[in-house]
Image 1 (cartoon, protein in one colour):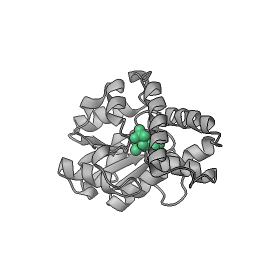
Image 2 (image 1 turned 60 degrees about the vertical axis):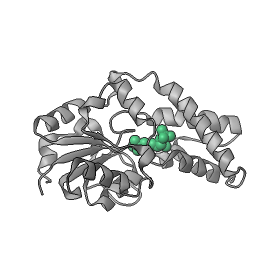
Image 3 (image 1 turned 45 degrees about the vertical axis):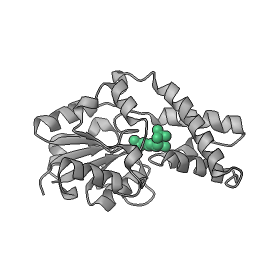
Length: 218
Ligand code: B16
Ligand code: MG
């Protein structure tokens, strides 16, 4: 196989929006009188908005407390808090090593895509001023199956016109690593709390991303 494309997760890989997701969920949980901490937040990484709320409710034995419509309304309330918080993002919030890594890949003819299930991804990329660096940005609204289903990674590969085996996926969440693995791509895990499938390449931070080293895997 020869490497043709890099497919990046957004939250936790290109920038650290996980802290804003945490603060927004925490605000909602406090208002509703539910327990929520960093440990529970870890379980929400890479998980869709509504499923994240279900996890918080389950941890508080409150799964049956709301109708599906009420759950939707409350999850949207969290999203309003999140949207307000991310407006403070600037290009300075791009994680270390990301820009040189993408620049080197692009200079070597490698295509780059974003596989984020966040419906806020386009706005985050715009605030970071990096939308133009990507050849394809998956539309989270059109992806039916959230991670760990491989759909979003397969959608990116197909849109770029490459086989999954020609792509590398880069993720910070266990659900994302499982999705990349099921898609048949090589997975790079950045600071992943491993609970099941291990990433093929384990990194502690994005500062360790090295294009020439990764290329040797393909
Ligand atoms: P939104 P990623 C994911 O983004 C986040 O990791 C996850 O915490 C969040 O719940 C999900 O997006 C949905 O985000 O509520 O903004 O649509 O890691 O796939 O970039
Ligand atoms: Mg992530």
